[in-house]
Image 1 (tube, rainbow, N blue to C red):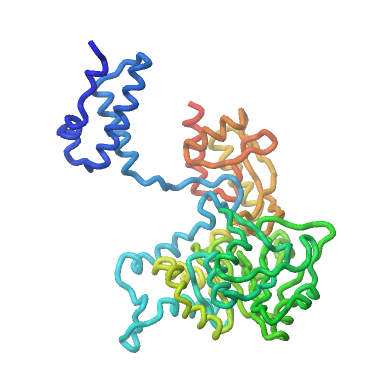
Image 2: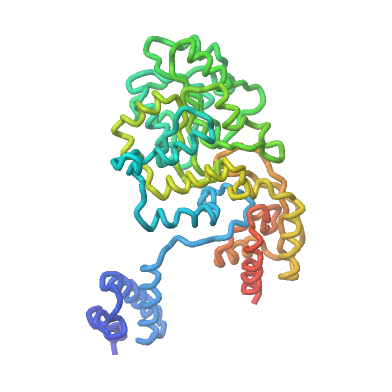
Length: 440
C-alpha cells in the first residue's frame, strides 16, 4: 500500500473535533507544514502514526500562535547589550505606569483648561527640572532626533562635521547617509585622526547652518589624534550666529565608577556650556526606555515641533510615562531604580558573593576575575572589572546548552563564563536549575 495515501487530507484534519477551538488560518499553516515534513520522513523510510502527526500539528500550532519574544538571562557581563534589549526597566517604574497604559489618561488633555493639551508637556517638564534646561522634546529614538534636527534647521544648507566623526553604528546607520536623506549638505573638515577648531572656523560660509559634533559611540581613535570639544564648537557657533548640535548618542548623570567618567563628560557638564541642541537615547546609559531626548533652546524646540515630520517620530503614552518615571527617580537620586546604574555600581564583593552562591548550588565551577564592557555603543574600549563563574567542560557545548535554557553566557580563554555583573540574585537559582537539567 502506498504510504503517502495513508496521510489524512488537510480538510479532514481541519474539521477534526480535537481542533474545534483552534484558529483555522493558523491551524491550516500548521497542518500543511507538518504534512510536508511527514512526506519527507516517509521518503526516508521513517515510521509514523496519526496520533504522532496530530501531536506535531498541535505543537507547531502553539509555536505559531505564541510570542517569539521572551525573557532571557544576560550572563555575558555586557550591561547595555544591544541584542538582548539594551537597558532593562526597573519593575517598580514599569508597575507605576500600568494604570496609564491600561486605562484612559490625560495624555493630550489640559485638566486646568478643560481642552486639548500637548502630549510632550508632562515628561518634558520633568526632564526640564532634571537638566535645568530651557526645553525638551521626545521622539522615538536618537536616530529620529538626528534626522529631525537636520531636516528642520539645515535642509539645503551646510552642516560642518569632523571627518573623524562620520560614524556608522548598528543597523548601517551612517551619519553621511542620514544627512543626505534629511536634505542637509555635509561639509567635512579636518582629517580622520585630527580636527582643530580652526578647521571649523575656516570652513564656515554663507551657506553654513550648523556646526555638528557626533559622539564616536562604537570606536575610538588613539595615538596621534585630536578632536574638538563641544564647548569650543558652541563658542564658535555663538560668535558666527549658527546652531551648534551635539549628537551625544548616550548620556549619564551621576559620576560613574571605575574611572568611566574620565573617558567623557556627563550630560550635566555638557549642558553647562548652554549648547543650542543636544540629543541622546532614553535607554543606553540613561537607563530608561528607548526614545530620543532632544535638549535645547526654547525657540529651537518650538521650531522642531512645527516640523510635519515630527508626527512620524511621535512617541506613545507608555514611552512618555516610563521616561517620566525614570526622570523622577533621577530627581530623587534613587539611582538604584535605574538598573543600568545599579549594575555598574555593584561592588566586586557583591559579585563574588553571587558567584559563590551559584558554585554552592551546582557544586561545580570556580570564581574567575574578568572584565566586561558597558556596551550599547557607549564608552568604547572602557573596561569594567567583573566576577564570573567559569564552568568545566567544552565551552562551546556549554554555551549552546545554556542558550537552549534561555541563558546567554560568553566564552573567554576557552572557558564558558557566567558573568555576575549582569546576573541578578533572583537569577542564580534559575541558572542552577538549568545547569542540573543540562548535566542530567
